[in-house]
Length: 441
Image 1 (spheres, rainbow, N blue to C red):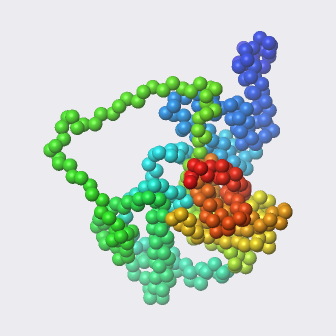
Image 2 (image 1 turned 60 degrees about the vertical axis):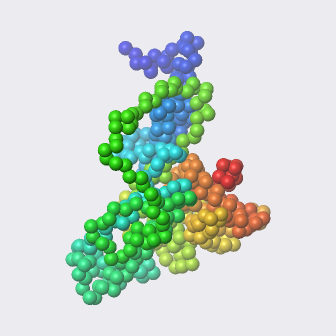
Image 3 (image 1 turned 90 degrees about the vertical axis):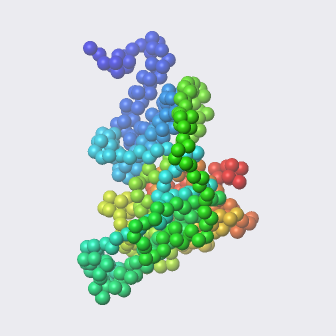
């Protein structure tokens, strides 16, 4: 008995309906591509040649549409991201998918409440931000800790010691431990600054009084004296009645969109959290690029800078390997490398602080370089691990704000803006940002 595939291939084309002829042509083409092309190229062809997004949007309920489209885009990104996209064949790619647990972050909903860590919220803003549990109890003293003093500019550590308990260190290590505590406190203040500056209009704090008091100031004790108490109406326990019980409404059934209308569905971006489960990798990448392109960057080997960043942010072997791949892709690729070549730049700066329209911001990198005609052009560069950050509207709005700030400081000079991704791509978004200016102003 012939399979349906053999029957379809051997059938007379004139006897087949238009959908069956289309299916035969596409499946034959994709079967050939599966042998000759990478998994990402094959998936990309299936999505675009098969008009998958429009057909999927028309076939699923409206309540599931964003999640389903988001899953397809996430799979495309994963084909490039999984182990650096090193799988040249479909078989190896499928085996890699089966051999590990993969997380798919929920698609970003513009009107939904987002629960984020402080590191995860870096680079994002909202009208209202609520900081939860702003008076957390102090962390317990670490036991069986490893104390290391290893300046970046030195080849070997100055001090390596094992501590039974941080609460009772030997006198010879007290200075090192005090310096470590000062650095932790500085990181805590930096995190508080990041958290507070995410709010555009209102910042709210909540707390649960800790059982143990902290010797250093908590976020609550630092901010509360400058804040206003929010009045919360009290509800008596005996005033509730059957009429006050809330009932859930049944959502009306929405028919799927017709195929021809699916093209008008909004583009679905991807959450920045889906690239890696830890923001530490992104922080480490920022730090290596900052060190390498700083005043003393040329004095230290790139390997040493990457090792120092991996140690600073506690990266495991897998994420350290990803850090090294991203750094080499950026600094060794033809698209991004010119923006880190000091000899080819008129001016360069990292973590550049700017203030514009009551917005305090910090640019990952700002450079000035000459184009082919010798015209001086400013470039606002934003680092993102995500392979397609231009699909996220919040990132585009953030880049627009950065560009507007630089244009205000350099009137009459051309200013362009771009993302630098962890895959070594330079994504110029100047036209996209300029075209959406009316939406953000």
